[in-house]
Length: 247
Ligand code: 6PG
Image 1 (cartoon, rainbow, N blue to C red):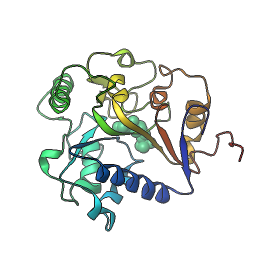
Image 2 (cartoon, helix red, strand yellow; image 1 turned 120 degrees about the horizontal axis):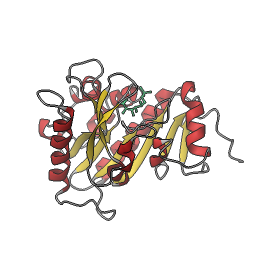
Image 3 (tube, helix red, strand yellow; image 1 turned 90 degrees about the horizontal axis):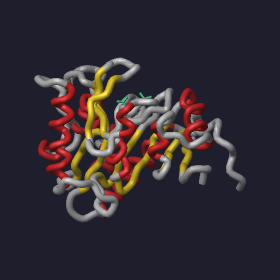
Image 4 (cartoon, rainbow, N blue to C red; image 1 turned 135 degrees about the vertical axis):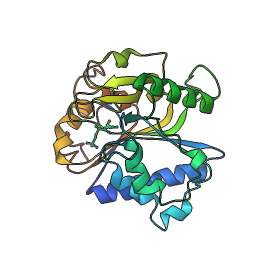
């Protein structure tokens, strides 16, 4: 256990992907009824998502019951190389028997970012079934998150006013990284997950992981600390700056 919560470290990104895909599958298979997964974007989770559609694991997923959502999206067409939906579609959604009605992509065409945020907010409200998020009733069964070099998560960036949003579930955001316009879930939605897993690999993330897990707690400066209540699943390189836990 690190200073802030549970984390698990794997020798390689491949072993990490095998563990997380099996963990998610087991949770979904053990559940009853709908199982809602909120996917993270960027490049890190692509290897993980590919595992969802690889036999024999692919045959164990209860595809008809799992609903797929996104924690954030770049405001680009879904066939754009930077699209988080596009990455997941290529990695597994197009390779597994996923019912189209179970895919809840963030819309990014034919509307403004603000209209997209409102549309996705309505999607989340329809799925959740009531107006106010309460801790007793989670929205997502599992929320997967990533961490940026600046400590952002989803598209909640350090110092952004969106970190203070407590009513809306989805907002448009400006990104310091291209593409500049994003859509992101807000902190109450991150908090409304039954389980949260921060997935990190690569040595270039070791410093920010160490700051997030062992540094002062300040989610305004390090929005990825919103995931400190969850499990941090790291490869050896990403964990390489953490204080060794005594055996
Ligand atoms: C996004 C993500 C974002 C991501 C981090 C890490 O849309 O970019 O959701 O929060 O998880 O930026 O991205 P990499 O995995 O590409 O380093």
